[in-house]
Image (tube, rainbow, N blue to C red; front, side, top):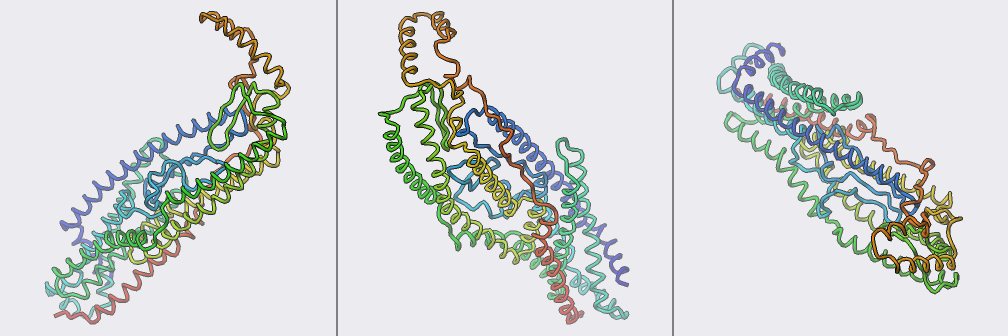
Length: 531
């Protein structure tokens, strides 16, 4: 009997105007959304390939260990086509600096807002499903009982010996099997567009993630079907029911996420990153002061009045490269780096304590949002989707944890191999070709005499080819580093078991919500006045 009732409702629904409109809306909006998101992913992929090629090129051109700071470029997540999560809030490039642990990748647009808070109105496949399927579920379920009562068929049906439980189950099943084909169509249309798109390919594991996402979508749809059914069992008129259902839809899909996001950022305020940056600058100044003292101390120990370089380049994070520099200055620079780099790494740990306090505040806000998401089926659905698509906060924190571990491995490699103490940390010039200060002065005098005689470009070209200036005195003429023994970063994304484990409680919550609402509906419909 349940199936007969469900079948009758299915046949009536699929020829109704609301089914046709709902189907066409899904067709147009899903088609547009998937095409746009695939195009966005392809752009991300092109940028990633360019950035990775640039990072690899720069790595191969490094000549001294003080410049060896591998830049890690995170590949875009293919599943962001379905759910962008917080991926649009984050950058994708991180440099493994020794003087400061990275807190966010480069490219993150603003540190004024919390990037860990999911945007409640991001436009992607999951957002569209969240909005459209929840609306259609309410549109098809708001009058399950009120319309039957208004038409007089409810009293007639129950008078034939059909139990209220059987009737209710048949009506709910009828709405569910009406909406399932629409949901299946949305996914199949997305699959078709993805399969026809070039440069977009999912692994078997990623297709499995999407299958689980489809099952979660069924739970989400069932939740709103039950919400509409419950409202219909509490009121007598369809006009009242549709108003309450629409208000419920706006509340759960739009207002609750907006209120939660605003409330979390307002009530759990974190320190401005500008203040954090000021504290970090103070620590850098302390390090600079003790470095200056050590600088003078080593100068005295080496018996130098000052330092002189023929060719020297400097940059961020302790990068220093020189060539053609006398051995006395070279030894001074080597000793400075041998002392300063380990100390600078220690100061980086001090800075990390400040950074982590700020980061922990952002994470607390993100966790709080996840807990409060239990107030909205829409938020639960989107958070489970972001987890399955590896675009949530946990995926970002996992990537950063791996990067921090790699930084420690790289630093340990430098220490164990004595790279901070080596001349190769600051120069690629062969050690046996480094001249004394007297020889350096003699060559410079010869250069000055010849330079005084140069009057034409031809004279300068002859001078350049004369060999008076050794080739190794130019940084560009020296060999690049052999990186065969340097540990390289290998990013391993979370596997399906970990993702399911992270989102399992929320999946259960959606299913449990359906059951609880079903029980409430059963109780309410048993008391429903059919007159």
